[in-house]
Image (tube, rainbow, N blue to C red):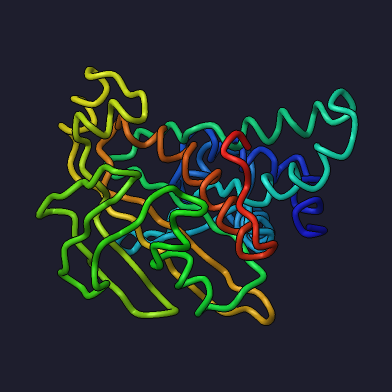
Length: 266
């Protein structure tokens, strides 16, 4: 957490975060063009932001793209904001809200990236991502699949079962990497979660997306990076998952570290 506060203390680094908040997934060249800083200075600031996990990078061909990561801000909020008077923490809350806004990107291939560190083991984290008894506790969802690449996945939520041939496992390397296509937006699903038919129709018209989980042991903790991609520009779904993933992963982290998931209202 000290690295996060150190990274946020510098106004130039806050400007870089503001730039990524306005348009996520920028290359170094794009970030330099929008700021009055040398390429070397921007690189140094980005390295500190990456070290604090406020920025996560992905590759698109030969380019390295930078994405805002709200996980450290969530951690600050959970540790501090609830312990002090809300008025005194107002500035910090505003920063948290700003960094959690859905990324607004003009990129042709927008992507959502979220990274968090969990006090657990790769084996236990893999179980949290795949075991129905575990996923139901923090997600309310269970998966019926054998977790082999190419296998179908049935999404089970309560008494609803969403079945579609394009819901499949893409990659499954136990304790290291998991990837699968996202679920199907059926009328039954939309009614259950309170989504109107107009929004559901827009969601269903967009290409199917995919979620990837990368697991890496780091000393006594495990680094989890979630990448959700395949969105069209101005996607209806991207703002929804940009809000949903941080809450979901925070609940999973709490369950792994304390044995209890966050309340649904959290």
